[in-house]
Image 1 (cartoon, helix red, strand yellow):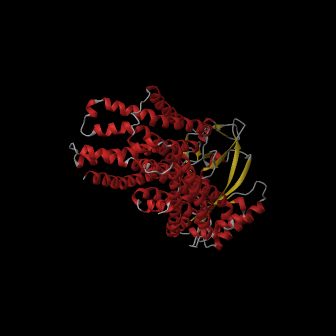
Image 2 (cartoon, one colour):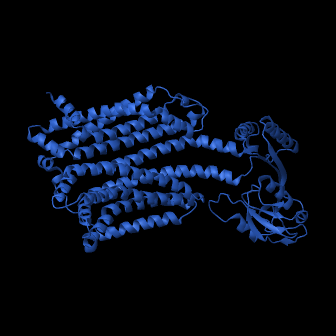
Image 3 (cartoon, one colour):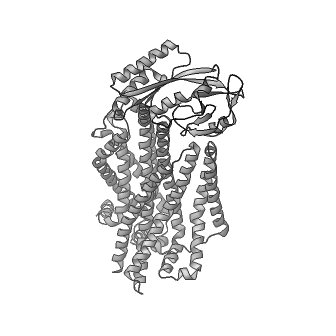
Length: 631
């Protein structure tokens, strides 16, 4: 048997040992390939989709590839960690250091080739599902039909064979530094119980509190300036949390006799204390990667919600028309006539109202304010089903938009309540109250006065016509088509809520899809890191529980201890990441002054649910392996 045959047979005859590394590598290839199927689809070969999404897809593909390199490298390192004793035995039997490195190189190339081919085949199976999902997420005129992705196959195969070659060379070089005695002892070498610094533990808590407090305190544009300092502080605090504070807490729990001596807590805390140093690094990496995934997806989803809901809440009309300042009365009349002609052409049943928006000087003389007659306001309120106003003769009311975007500064209502309505005879009427309404679209707020008071205002500083249409329900397709024609014919004068939302979703869809793709890759990779951390120590755990079972550990007690260990490994970093993500999304909501509670809950809740399912599956197989070893 040649050395190449030995390496080949070593892989085929030890499937259980190699399966985890193989599956993680195959999954990485499959993710990249399915993304490549989407990126190289013929529908994106030209046109508007190419202009808006092609560059983003290229950048995303690069990010996934670079991250795949480090993910596969970590997987390979964890895999080799569990094979130290095997390498030591080979060297004792006469294998040279060079031969061991050559064996590892050949094995990795073989696994890489099989993982690449298997990942491409698995990607072909899920290709149609990915294209269907993309077609529903993206708003494009072309259909994302299934095609044979020749270019995607070539790019994926070449990229990952190069990746596995580089990793094989890199890993084989690393093995030079391992001594025989260290390889033979393998995981039996005691790393010693890690010590925790009280000062660093307190510093960890302070850094997290300062980071969280700053993120939750700042608002508006201050969030942007605080972003980098907060990220640095929280990242450092997270590292110290797992390397120092968590170790300190475990040591304190061990010193508490009522807790430490309670049932099987001795096994849990003793084992956790000795393994905390290694787990702390994995926890930190998983927490940061997961936080990036949560924040990226939550931000993209929240920003889309902010854009779309903001338009829907602020503008209750189906169509609105506002002429340019320099347009003559004849041009305006023609535009409105053309507007109605387009609506009639599309068979849209809509009611129309129009009024002249007038602006008057305020007593301060340094600003103008819109003042509206109560009758005009009520006509528009009736159009959209809003509450009409019943004003007294000398009463003025301040109206502001409830959905108005306020990045920073004083609200419109606060300014208008301190001012007054100036009549032509010099009399001033103080506003009596503030109401929130979307009846008229004026972000700076305005006054509504009784009709008799309006007649005493005198000559306005400026005026402009405002026309609005409200279409009846069940005409979405016709409204979209009319909106497209209006945007082409009347350009910036006409505004259609439905067509604007359509355009936003069309432009934002590729960004959201790419962000979701990358976020899911990061999150699944973080779960794989936890999986490797767990199964790297599996053989040692089997020996430990086999010994403890001989002195009376029962099956229910064993299951309880294992469940706790796996739960801590899986949920501690994810809980920290969820808290980080919640704070980050809260800061984002304060940046735009928009409540993202629902969006944040959906994103974070979805990831938490996925992690619970992942934990249940991994725990089942892990407990099964441990139980089998002690029977």
